[in-house]
Amino acid sequence: MNINILQIKFSRLAVLLLPIILRQPAICALLSILVSPFSELLSMLTKFRYTTLEQLKYNGQVCRLEYCLNSLFTDQTGNEHIRVVDGQQQTGQPFYIYPRGSAQHIEMPMPRGTDDKHIILNYRENNAEKYYDFFVIVPKTLSVNQTRLRAVINNYKTPGKSFKIILT
Image (cartoon, rainbow, N blue to C red; front, side, top):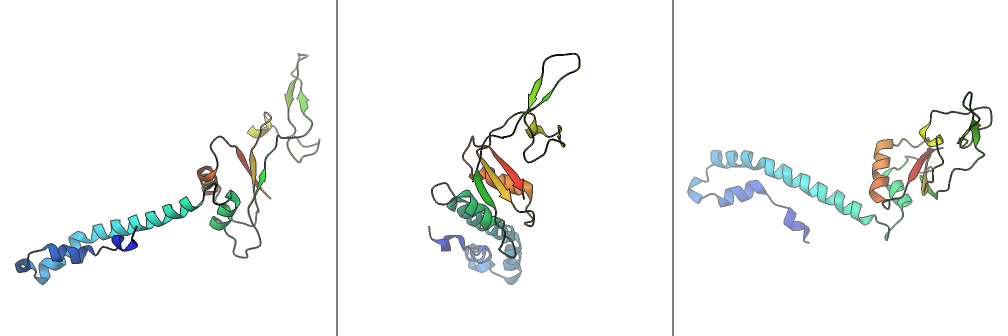
């Protein structure tokens, strides 16, 4: 598609569509005021088209999710990068909670990377073993909006795949 098709000057077009007899400075100024919202809409459309075409460049056949995330969330120094690693099932020895007056036990997975002294029970991801298809490792020095990062990952990931964001 020719890019010049989106370069429309609505004020000039409105004046050219006006009969020659009515082309007075006051009427032309009034027409340019009336047509200015269309110019703003066209600029918004052009910007939306450009961002959509940029998004369509990133797919599973062309590049990896890691490249997309690093291009969108860049660091000023350029030293820290977002990494995407393959997932695995949570590992670790389960610990047991025995309810009072019962011989039954409830098996819970150990939180990742903790020792036996500190067990936190209020995290949802520690309530059952979960399988993550991939992990997104984000450096803490990189200031990233978590909501936007999740939205970008959900946009480009394959449906049905689960992920976890880990801040290091």
